[in-house]
Length: 561
Image (cartoon, rainbow, N blue to C red):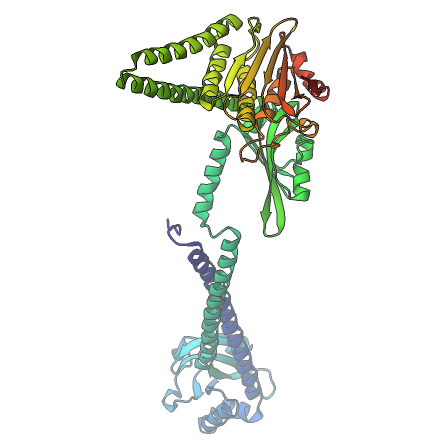
């Protein structure tokens, strides 16, 4: 089977439209030529028969045919043929024997020996008729009429008037040439139309070939079904054009239903996609409540030219996003802890190596003992404060990080955190404390320089777990306290901030806890900030559902010290 796939779209359209134009024009032209040929034959035949009837009614012709007067009829036949613009006029008697003929030697012979026509309709039945035959002088249309006696009661002869068909052939040939020109013109018009339409069409499909579009469509479907994010798309009418399997599973919709073509309002009335369709403003990382699920969603309008043609939304469950974020945070904390320890110990080792080289062995031993004792003291304190290895590892890593920065991380005496409930996700706790301590270290270093102190207080007394992080930074104004947990908001000039405290707030709310911030002030100037984290020992769904209420009840206090 002939395949056109190896041709580009433009050449396919030129070939297809050209062939269609040639076939259509050729078929119509052939029909027109055949119809014209038949009509001309019929008109010429009718004309020949009318001339034959007129001649047969002439008294002179009746008298000469009845008398068999060829001498009179022969010159008369030439004269009548000339005047009627016919090719010939032939006379015959009642037996069909020629009395006059363009070729005199044919006179006296039967008219049937020319074309096989016995002339029975005229001679026997006395009726005129038309015939098309190949005679001695070529193809002709012949009108034949009987010659009656003067009384009109008896057939005494026959008149045959013929018109040659070469005239018809010439006329038809002229029309056939016109038809060929029409076919050529239609083909050229089809070519120009195909070129224009192909260019316009390819611009609309971004200059892609049909096979490329097919492959992209298959890849698009495969991609939509393999991604873990739910993806929904609507057109300019608000009807669903894409609804992948992940979206159905995420929203826990019936998998047996078909959603393509349905209005988005009928399926997901609170999706917010119609707002984006109307306003044309993209929305990124929006936290939404949809179909009884808390989601992180992105909504992007599809714009073609200056028209909004649709909206695409992708979303995932918020707890999945939080889980990924927490894992990344934890990995980052571990990496920083290892880097801090490596950097710190390299400095100590270089110092010890230098002391040994200058033979200052006692000083080297003192440095070793000092480092070992301070590190061991902190580890010993950690073992007394908490028995949870994950929490202890996090605090030890932050201790090493603080030493690298030249800041001291101190756990206040009397701190205790041995009653961590099993239901409390350790990675979430580590993420919250890690972010708070990192912020405290940065604030202290930027305001106090090296030598500053960050104090950590832990208490598991009562029904709550309490973590306090105090820094020696510049403090936080009341205006900033109202915004400090907003995503993207930061008081730091450097880029890439404004995310950590938003994550802390989100995780705290998820655990049903509460976090407060306050400035530690003195009579002279602000001397730092205190972040206090309250987490319930009993982690239940009710704790988490009340998180939003707790968010509104956050207190901001100023403490005089």
